[in-house]
Image (cartoon, rainbow, N blue to C red; front, side):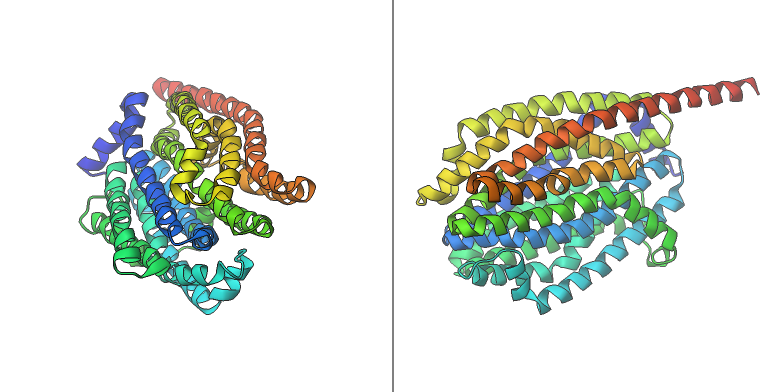
Length: 463
């Protein structure tokens, strides 16, 4: 191990848990919030073009969820293993995982690009676009497809840096790209009169900038892992492990796309106002939850490093700290969201009272259960970062798949639009209940591993 790598190992396994997590979480929270803000900025500026244009953002969000599913699956699948490998001081194996994930994600992104450009209009129809929303969605979506390889690669680079415990570098790449997107949106949409295509071009350009910044850290030796084409595509086993470990992320992101499609399809019969309202609420909730996700991403490398180094008590301490702080933080944001729901919706469509009425009710229902996601989010991250792929996949699938998809269809048929608005909050509550028995099982297992590690250490001292 190099001197820098040894110093990073000591930092990850010896720094007091609260200080370590906060130092890693602050950059990731900023990154997630900037990303969510520029997603909301897209929604805000495009909404000024009309209700149908606002609905188009919700349609194309499904496409972005697919692209994110590829990038985050490869990135999180590799990152979880990289954290544990660095904790075990296996540098070369970590390099192989990083290279395989990066080049593999770009290859899959190229396939998404080709399929998207060939089948743009049929895909938008499939994703729930109405006749009035389709032209906007197609214009927006074409540019998003063009950026698929770059976005997939950037998501992998971002996750690798975070898995190494270098969240500040990740924040620089993602944050600068996000801020650039916010600045370019009004310029392209209104000043240059490019309409909804301008929002898409701003997103594409900012993603390219983020990608180049993140890649520069690897090329300049700022990262612990090295990217080499010779290390990619050499081992089917590595790709199998990456996909297995990233399966919770694939389930979460893939089902997020399926859930967005189901939401658009069930909301469409109630008019463009319903599609636009639910799309806006989705972005608002995503912004609130981005704080928790960013906080959790500061926790993941801590859990992975210390699990790999057999420091199980630190894993337990980190989980407890995350859940307590996360719950209180989300509770504060939920109270604000519940109280100011109509005013928040009015920021996007002040001249459409139907959008405000539909969205405010949905947002208030969501705010009631948002604090519970502190438990479900960190449980999922804990299981994934310590290699418990199947339980993590179940929790990741529950929120927007196992529970949400049947609920949004069933409640729509049973009680109409109210059912569409209630489906996600009910799903979130059920997901929380599923986490309780899994946590009991996991911490019993962790206690057993801790006892075995102590016994092994005692035997080594005797020898």
